[in-house]
Image (cartoon, rainbow, N blue to C red; front, top):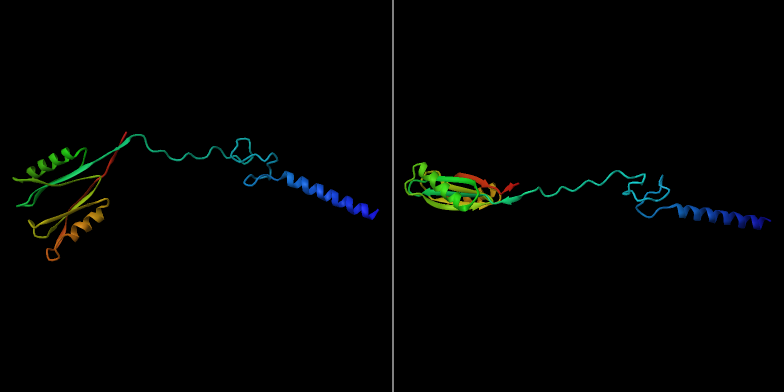
Length: 169
């Protein structure tokens, strides 16, 4: 009789282990309090916490270039500067107009730039040569403009501005 009791005990233990194994959910699906093993992203799951947060979408609209320009009368260092213009032509015309308005008689376009920063370095005595640079960051444009100055000129930054693209809706 003892032999049959041991076999019966082992059989009951095996059945309990099988029932426990059948009650376990697939990996990644919690089983505690979830007798149907419903995935947590289903609305009838006890673990459902609402729809996942939406990732931010690209804002409606489009990006437009913005231009800047520098005009200068080289003999006097009188300049006209402009940023955030909708086109190269508009930036050029406005910088020439501003140079003339500042007293320049023979203003000429020095350079244009768009969707970036520009800097001009000049010797501390006005009228010396100018050195300019552009970059995505104003600090880099300034460093590049200063590095183009001769070491004995004692240059400093006389202009540093950016024209960033604009989101148009």
